[in-house]
Length: 412
Length: 172
Image 1 (cartoon, chains in turn red, blue):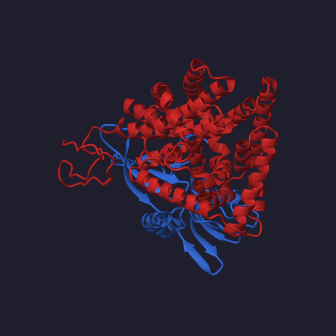
Image 2 (tube, rainbow over the protein chains, first blue to last red; image 1 turned 90 degrees about the vertical axis):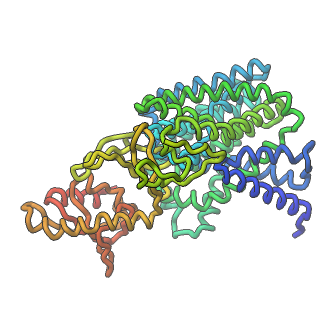
Image 3 (cartoon, rainbow over the protein chains, first blue to last red; image 1 turned 30 degrees about the vertical axis):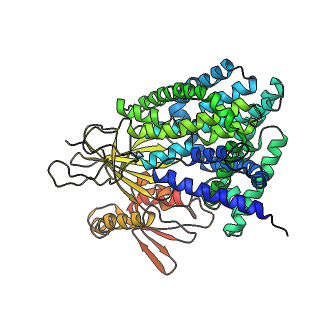
């Protein structure tokens, strides 16, 4: 076997750089996604270092990254949770969809994009990053807050809506007619519902099959990955997109099997998702970014506000006060991996769209978490911004966390 | 699964809230009027929070416990109480009895968590010990995994014990 030295070296340098960037991001409890994007922008044609040898690997890896992202999303998903969220927050989900898909569509229309572009941009502005936000809520210690169930419900509903949206996008992107698109959506929805039914009624049987003969981690990884890639290929061939195929596999696994699959897949998912974010950055030419920057900033501003409105509404349904509503609204601002999945699906052949979406995600993946950190926090001295002795001098604040850019501690 | 509901656990009003994709949150007020909540994460970890002061919607994070730490805390909090119950109540309270229930192979809770049976919430009867072969697990926590062949030692009313038996040995 002959190994290309250039490939190994380029890939090694890329991964080492990503790891460095990731560490940096985690240090400030920020998502590494925008930094991966930036790394992609900086590399490649027209960037500081072209990576010709690693290019092919990154391209292949990106496809697998999308599949693994959606598989992991499906594995997180459970029918009872979805049903409960739908029951409680259907109006929140609808408000969220209308308020946040519309600005993207309007922007696409104003920029003179074609139907695919308009549809994609609507999806990009609609879907919040459940990955970034779930982690953020935990990092900011908000899991006990009254508004948190509302935020998480909106995310679950969005993820489900995406499963219907991706096949629509896939068909329209390949130049299919509206009838084919409708057929694709129905097919995908049917498959998703079938998977949900299977997981609900026969989930433990499937799990037992998967865990048959108590496989070790390696065996389980190969089993799940093999099945997922086959289903993804079939879905792609049926024009409902490989991503939806992978999501369906994830959906049909529940309980113990899903937990174990999640465990063995998670490092692989992290690697290939990073490669995917990198590839989006790589495929956008840096010189196309500057002209669309004003549009990206404006769109970011508008959709930050519309997301806040949606979160405000959802939190109000939970009976939360004003500060809680503000926290919920700002928490939802972050867009990330799934906005990029949509761009990846239509390909970045539309130069302007790719650059616009990359700039947009870059902006909101960074500002969203920062804004929510400072929005709606306690004005009282126990805001958790520093270790300080509270009035009475007996109790110490147990939260010793210093948020990045730390607010100055306020005295009582 | 309901999004949020109030359940009575041992005479205390507990508000159960679903955190989709993350876990469950249990909220309650103590007799002194302090409100606290326990977030059970999917990862098996727990977070303990207190509510206080200006914004009643905002929890003040107190601790994050690993699965093992949570087990130890539960043991510290629960063990003496259950032992007391076992010693005193079966003797003194008429109608209270003890029973043994086998976890049969192929039953609905084989390889599932004891907490998932929600036996105490649903029946009022407590599972105070699990006999597994030679081994006895005293006052098992909700994260205890049940195995086929386990024998559960249950304290409760006659009806309560029968109901637990129905839950544990139900057909799938």
